[in-house]
Image (cartoon, rainbow, N blue to C red; front, side, top):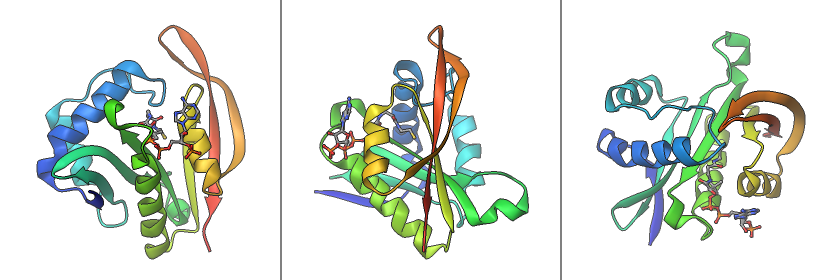
Length: 163
Ligand SMILES: CC(C)(COP(=O)(O)OP(=O)(O)OC[C@H]1O[C@@H](n2cnc3c(N)ncnc32)[C@H](O)[C@@H]1OP(=O)(O)O)[C@@H](O)C(=O)NCCC(=O)NCCS
């Protein structure tokens, strides 16, 4: 059985492996170089109680992760968070991403965020469909804002207002 729980430091190798695979093989993240364990430790330490990291734990194996991050370091934006979620390639398409997103939405409500924003790059069709099914609405589209694998890529901003 799959369960979603807060990440602990011991999950970092699995989280990093999933993220580095996405860096290498997808346009979902605009990171282009694999993350080192030290960079990931700093990332983990920056995510305090307002910006949880969750993992999808499948019988002890971390098969996906998700997090909230600051949208901006300017304090008036503190009512808004950005979200990310990644599922290991062999585990995609069986509902893990849906469970991670729903857990992130529950955390966002508990933390009393007013708004969540996702930046979804061209080519991330599953992600776009998943967030739209959960009520996110396109708030803008940045044209050719990044370049990866030799291609210029559009980025959509998807936003959800929370009650
Ligand atoms: C986006 C991602 C997290 C989704 O996780 P997942 O576990 O595969 O998601 P689920 O199985 O819960 O559902 C995916 C939805 O997308 C659909 N989907 C899957 N692959 C798809 C594709 N290539 N094109 C269109 N839709 C697709 C599924 O059918 C499902 O929709 P449905 O429930 O309406 O049928 C995962 O695909 C992933 O890690 N992708 C690469 C990284 C990424 O894009 N991250 C998001 C960055 S913000």
